[in-house]
Image (cartoon, rainbow, N blue to C red):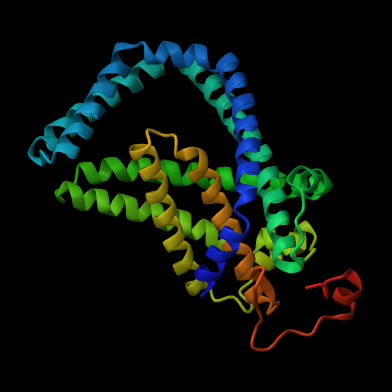
Length: 323
């Protein structure tokens, strides 16, 4: 039911996706310009190298044979990819200083751009929450400015932690990929386990942090209290939340891959902001259900818990009775 309600909330708030799309394009454009100035010279040198082109040709051949179903040649192509990769690492070792500096600058750009993108996610969540609680239609930009302080503080904590987790997962998945390639398992079984591991890692991250943002926006908690609330197990059906997130992750992955392949990337303009929006909708729905607070999924439907929670004195005077 949570997934069903989240989908209805998503449809009810679909116009906010276009606003988030515009905001993300601005952030992406600025980050791209800075990246082009600071990192592109080294990347250009790397792309022009024979080692990188050898690796790229190997990957292209691997993907082509995979799509054509010629699986018997995949083993030899995987060996070619690993050899080209080793040669590229050897090249990078000769340019270690430049590579490290460019890598650190790229990491800094990614963190800053994720921080700004997170401000947009916070504004999106606030707009959706107001619609769920009060049927109020709030402007995206006005909401972004009004919540700038809370959004900045939230992302100052969340983005570094999220980036650290993503880096750990990336390194782990990178190592797992080559371990599976060297295994005796059939290629498609290796690919299945790799995608399964990636899906599980993303699902765990979403499950652990699912209540953090709603606790700040709907629960009006401070950063410390929201973090404590998010990682507490009280009244939290973790396995149910994880199963729902696993479905969302698989659907989001399939949607974005379809948009990339079937529309030559054009569909990503809608599928990417939609992916963030559906996750935010589920987080809010999960929070409302956990706290037993009624909410609307559209103008004609209100979801009320079987036993509505009585508000405390502090919550009443804080204005939480305006559902």
